[in-house]
Every structure is written in structure tokens, then in C-alpha cells.
Amino acid sequence: MPGDRRVRVAVVISGRGSNMAALIGAARDPACPYVVALVVSDLPDAQGLATAAAADVRTRIVARRKDRAAFEGELDSVLRSHDIELVALAGFMRVLTPDFVRRWEGRMLNIHPSLLPKYKGLDTHARVIAAGDTEAGCSVHVVTAELDDGPVLAQARVAVLPGDTAEALAERVRVEEHRLYPAALAAYARTLR
Ligand code: GRF
Image 1 (cartoon, rainbow, N blue to C red):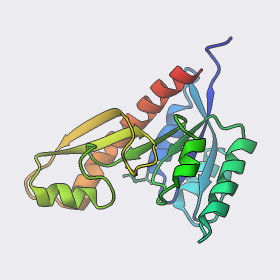
Image 2: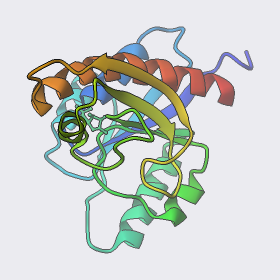
Image 3: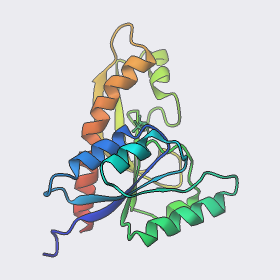
């Protein structure tokens, strides 16, 4: 039935893939409006690749290289050859060029471990603690050409506790990431079908 079909998602990772696993897990519910049709990693030894394969999700490696145009050209053709409609970046550690972002405009989301617009870039938790903030969190946003800058779709907050380390805070934020990303991706996918 039109309106009931599942949007084909590719999750793009570079590492552990715990958010990817949460996205795959949520899609096991037949009512989920998206299906994870593909997982792509730019690193061949990304832990998430084994997790995806164990969950019977197709995986592809698009190897990181100096020639960004070649890398992004291959990534784009892999996504298109799998009829991907929506891309979910999840711990993908490369900055994409404006040209690639334009090709997937409105069709690419990212999860960032801060309450955007605060703390774009890396080492967010250490910076939250150094600044003496009392709350931290994570954001799901639409990817635009500026790093960590696109429209925020959803956020979750956690308290910063006295004596928190960056690792402890990251761990608590990650629990929220695993709830937030599947929900935000599902809501976004519903708008596309
Ligand atoms: C997460 O903290 C995510 O917010 C950030 O990179 C990390 C990826 O972790 N973009 P994982 O690979 O999903 O476990």
C-alpha cells in the first residue's frame, strides 16, 4: 500500500557501530517505516561491520583514500546501486564535501554527541565538562555542507554529574543516542514515503 512501504536506509560508519546496531534493532519491528538495506564502512576493520553481518544486513567497504572525489564517487554509486533513499551517518569519521552533501540533500542524517549548536566537532564530552555545563546530550540533524550544522530534528539531554569523566558522560549520552536515533530516523522516514 502506498504510504506503508519501508524507506531504504544505508547506515554509514567508521567504528564500533553501536548506533548502527540500534537502528538495525528498531527496524526489526515490522511497523518501523525504514529498513536498513546496507551498512557501509570506510574502514575495513570497523567493528560495526561484523555486527551488521551477524544481523544479516548487507555490508560494503568503501575504502578511505586521499582522493576525496574518488571516495565520494564510489560511495555515491554504492548507495545508488542499492536503491538507497536515506543515509544515516553513525560514527562516520570523515567530513563530506559540499558536492556530495548536495547530491544527498535532505536525504542524509547524522547523530552528534552534543546539544547542537553547542560543541560541534570532536571531543564534545571533554569540552562540556571543561566548560562546567550542567547538562549534555545528543542531537540528530539533517546533514548540510557546514559541519554539524544542519537543522536539528531531535535532541536528548542528560545531566552532567559531579566528578564526571568524558568517558562516563559519553557512556550515559550513548544510552540516549540509542533511543533517539531510531526514533528520529523513523519520524523522518515517515515524511519521505
Ligand atoms: C557516537 O557518539 C555518535 O554520536 C558520534 O560517533 C559516535 C559513534 O558511536 N557521531 P558508535 O560507532 O555508534 O558506537
